[in-house]
Length: 359
Ligand code: ATP
Image 1 (cartoon, rainbow, N blue to C red):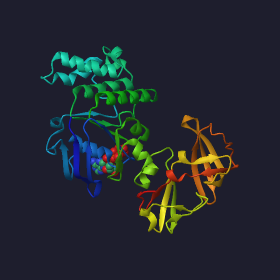
Image 2 (cartoon, protein in one colour):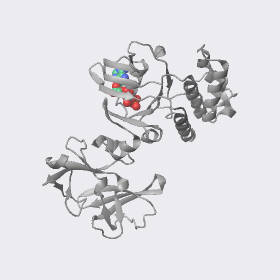
Image 3 (cartoon, rainbow, N blue to C red):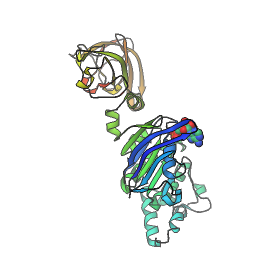
Image 4 (spheres, rainbow, N blue to C red):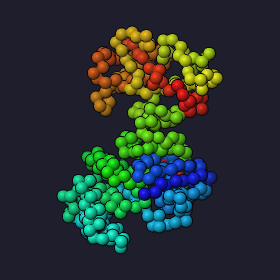
């Protein structure tokens, strides 16, 4: 297994710069998700690593070797696309075995061992002798995955492999991929615009925006400690509540989120204004007054995934979204007055340019 590294990578299409000087390493044996909105450059980066696209400047390393001049085949990579690539007229086992037979160094016993291993992990033993045409779309995608995994290439690139699978198979396929990644520890780059998929599958997430990697961290760190407003907004469902142009005076901010002025970290003391952010699940609604609570009115209420309520609040001039368990023990009637806490330990402070520099 080897690390994959890109250095000073740019890609221009005419006057448009799709990738703006990327430097990053995809560590061996880990799953790195490229996550970001449509058009941010995920697929372009993956295609350059695969050798399907030439960078305008910069290098791609496989281990310590520059591979810019190597063809896709010479790079020895596996690829799984949105639509399953499978061969009709042969069964599942033969589909998986096909690329293995090209490797003369593999004995029949080793081929069978690898095929059985991946069939077991993907819970597909029963389908081994079935013809591809007998399978649903989700199972076909599993076969496409199995074929790449069994080859044990330098790296496997997944380009939104769940997107076009029918809704019933999505969850099952996601679970199967998780199991596969956990058990086999192959080096994987996984492109997705779906944060839940990235949070579930990734060891680390490279968050992309407009041709730049804005942050690379474990899913938990990225969620809890967004480097900038974009990460706070893009992750979470819904994303963070933001409050812009909050004036810093004598090292403190005072606004409708807090009953008394709150100190900001030294990094922000000299900023005239900052942006504050807090995730909706950290906004606390209480039935009675507490030292940290402010008065607010409930302006909307909806049930969201997990049986929680998404509550819209208005406190003075500010609005906030709060995610509250249905068992919170507070009446959440629209129009009613409640007490709300914005716990300071969960409030993130961003400087004027949108970057976070401590709390
Ligand atoms: P999506 O999820 O929509 O595929 P993405 O993050 O994968 O988005 P890319 O497909 O890498 O984004 O595209 C990045 C930008 O580069 C987009 O603005 C796209 O229009 C542009 N682009 C990609 N390929 C080409 C090309 N061959 N010619 C011109 N522009 C391109």
